[in-house]
Image 1 (cartoon, helix red, strand yellow):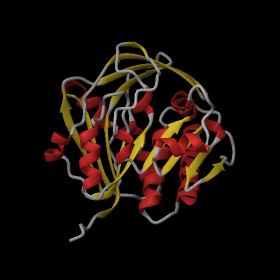
Image 2 (image 1 turned 90 degrees about the vertical axis):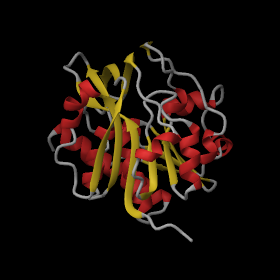
Image 3 (image 1 turned 30 degrees about the vertical axis):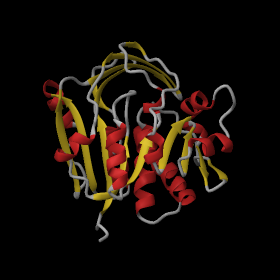
Image 4 (image 1 turned 30 degrees about the horizontal axis):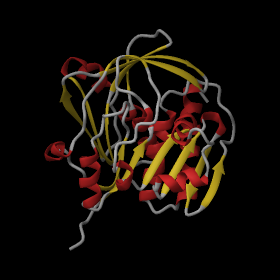
Length: 277
């Protein structure tokens, strides 16, 4: 008997606290940066995020005014990921001051996953265990994954980037979103190409290049989508908004090229709003 799913997207990820260019601490991570995409597409579903109890007030405030139909659930963790970020346009560097929770299949007892589409947005390697991805895929969910979890070390200090793909993890994914930097790390020493995407074995691979747009590798084709204009604004979280919008669009029946265009447009609108127009 086939299972019935609700429309929308379930996002599962650690929240974090970001200090950007020396600013005060602010709530961050995909749970926070995905919200504008849910709003832009008037989408429902669920966001499950974790943080330490002492940070719940600051992080929880970021979810005030969440769209109707979007459940937002905080899960207590021993500590919250902390990032010290230096950002200038498309260029960013990170320092890791604290690591966070690892999501496992055992967490499913506390997770309501009503939608077919589920997106994971690990901030560091080890944020998401393969058994959770495997269990959801086996239950008929379509799993999307942010490639940060494949290249980021979970150690304190300057963020270490190197390929670290857990055995079997990619087998359970339908969509993999990579930044151009992450793609280069996974393809090294060769440039990222259609052959690289095919070797990863994920049906839909998206490589985002900030103001340079996004490239979709799908069904043997390579499709590039450029933004309508470059918006000169601090862009932390744009990749999270892109992944969220893409998954929502796919759930609504858009094919991968159309969903890539939708996600690019949503990010453009979000960045324009930051600029004030």
